[in-house]
Image 1: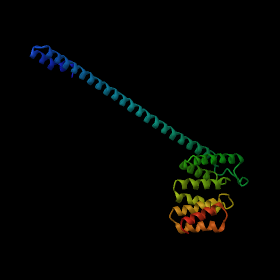
Image 2 (image 1 turned 30 degrees about the vertical axis):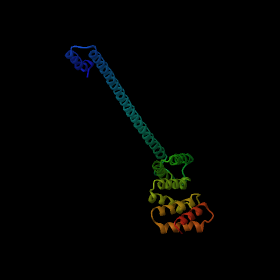
Image 3 (image 1 turned 180 degrees about the vertical axis):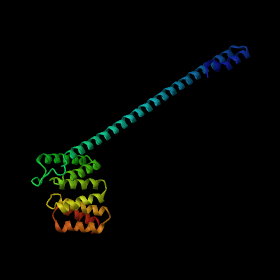
Image 4 (image 1 turned 60 degrees about the vertical axis):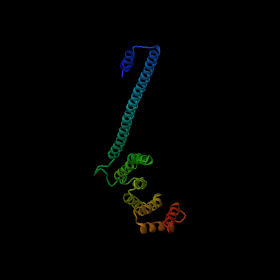
Length: 239
């Protein structure tokens, strides 16, 4: 409402009384002053409201900008993971021996391939240490396929089992530990694999088999760290 519109009733009243006295005139002037003050207050409220609306709009725009930056950063991180996986796969595939190229006089990979398989193994373990268990499992599985004779095979099997264990895929982790126990009894990973295999059995709800596996460690390898952990597992089961 404009000032002029708000003052019309007052002017009408002034004309009606004909300004019969100075008291009436002062009252009219006072009322006009009050109206002007109310108009000023209303204008102030409107200005404050406009400022608040502008601030809210600016905050919303900044929030949308932050969301776009977050999405862009997330997409970039995913792209980097995909690139890393692609590079690792290409590096391993480039070293895979072709059928018919190895003779009986070459029972083991050449020295260059040995150095390459160690780099591939270290790259997969780096993913494991970073907590990227799906990518680590993929890299280790490809490593085992590409380098079946590698001296890193027991370690690769163990980290593959750990990756699946941390992903709570206990049925996939157990075969990796089984292969260490069966094929690499002289490996330093033998006892750790027996312990993790027993824990996999327990996690799958196969309590009798797990108890048997824990007792094998306690009775057959007393004094080892794995035997102590196995004994604690049995105690936790009330045995």
